[in-house]
Length: 460
Ligand code: ARG
Image (cartoon, rainbow, N blue to C red):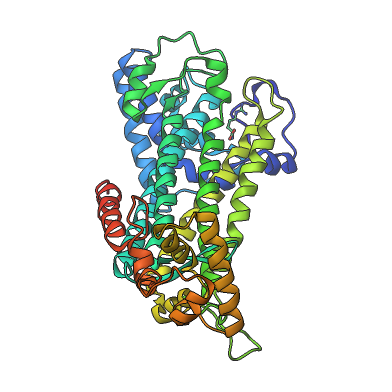
């Protein structure tokens, strides 16, 4: 088939070259953005009298019909037309003849594809933000049910101090809030219209770039045509934002995997979100969480792969940049399915509150509070640390927890102890005395839940 750019060639391309060169197999998913961009361009060409109003209208109307046909599955794309841009243009020309050939006036595929990708990334960010908001709202609802559910907080994966399950969940809500913000920053980076940059040096036609920007919902136009066609920072920013989100989901998945092991038994996953083993009948595996954890690596690969693609490219457009699409699409698809599935998994799991409480009671997680009691009774913190250390050593030998030691046993280590120590090391006291902003106390976490519901849910 003859190529749109075939004028200066007298030999047709090798079929292998066509396969290798073409991007239609994956960039067809830009059809909506591509047609939207072409409609705005045609409208502007008409307004600027570069084409007639009738031509402009016919092009726009036909593009609308092509869009509807694509959505209805009636359009077959051709590999000979290389990419989505030339496919749409050739269908347009098939339908309206010479008028269709005027659409590309004052435009290059280089500024066209850059525009399409920016539109795509902006849409993708908005979609992921909606999914992350929904996930965060599910966590807030779950947290609301567990502001009294005491569990051990960990450092080094060793029981450290008692917190609540709500407090633990709220840490992830904070991460997801940052993810929302980060995706918002990506939208800002992508919110610049490159169309009008031409192939690399703009064009001699009197285009109205600001008009096109407004039509397409861009906040500004690019200020340098070379950069306009060759900037893919916004793709890298998107991949980075997605990678960080996936890193958060992966950490959460790791905890879910630990918690549903019999060693922890803090949670039980719903049968609908776990799988069995083909050989071991007793097994119930957290495959969903493991897959989310695994897929994080894949999005990091998308980021690093494309970052590396860009690193040696001279200005301006180079075909290497066609490699922006698959990582961006893959990262989007991966993050989306992970966010949605993960939300369902945590929304349906059972929280084994008694096991959590017992674990917090068993691991000397109130030892800091015992030391703090001594400080309040005139002992310097370092000395208090040493005294409680001795008590812990003794309790370990006796197979007891701190609250199981008798007052005599306390006083044998230091006579300053009286029976108010028991109230001070009660797990509820330990948690609820930590009522500084950011702390695990029930009232503090309840306030944080309410604030975050407003912040996250309000934007829906
Ligand atoms: N399919 C190409 C891409 O995705 C479109 C731009 C091609 N431009 C060119 N001069 N070959 O990057």
